[in-house]
Length: 368
Ligand SMILES: Cc1ncc(COP(=O)(O)O)c(C=O)c1O
Image: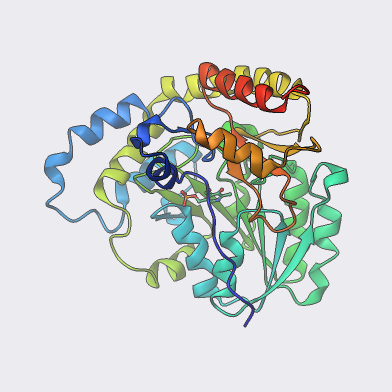
């Protein structure tokens, strides 16, 4: 069996705080791409008022959250499975379905590969190219189908490149995959910022009309429930039943179920989060683009991939110097298919973005 890939993720404020000897809240975390507005006020009130319920088990059927999601996306509750973050579901799928050959686009979120390696699946890769700004090509994916592939993982928009594959191209990929009996797992962890592009926004819901499609969503990014852990999977009812029967009970805790449900009901917060990112993304891209020695990869997500092109300063030097100032970025060294010169940066609040931009500008200035 191939060596299991080593996982490195954003969000490790704990290690940096220990290194710097400071409290965790003094770290400004640009390494995890989480809504900078924080969690929904309605969710916060609901979980604070529910602390007295922690001596009960959580609902093992996650019934109320399923009903809320069912109303939110207009899909039957039988097509939904809730997980302890979408990561639980990413591991559950290969464990239950036992694919032999899995197609993965790279660079991408590393847990797909690890989950498939753990069950002994063979990984086939479609490598995105820097010269194409890492744009995913549906043709190059479909050209791999004939190699006996059983499952395709596709992250849209892709982490860490921020590129979006349009809805109609994904649907074409799914239709082609059906001819080869390939299950397409479309991970829409960052799609809440682009609601019209989701496969769940189609009048005929993608994952229900196409038996070979699974859509994954997360409450970690847009809804910022990172520390509570909640995600979900949309698929045809037969597949949901099969997955549900083979998983551990109570993996989604009471507060996560309540917070997720209430977040979906917080319309003002959802509107404000969308409005905020729409206004901040272009400012962020324009300001960081003006720093010499940094190349910005065009992004449609709430994070941006940057290439450090300055000769005398490596991305690692830059990462280290910023970390010493309490500014934590995501080094992309561990992403397959990305060189060490890349960094991923979450778009945060105006003041935080300005602070990072100024710090980077100083470190990369020609006179530094
Ligand atoms: C593309 C993608 N999918 C899924 C996840 C996992 O999300 P969750 O926190 O819901 O497990 C991440 C986390 O970084 C991610 O980047």
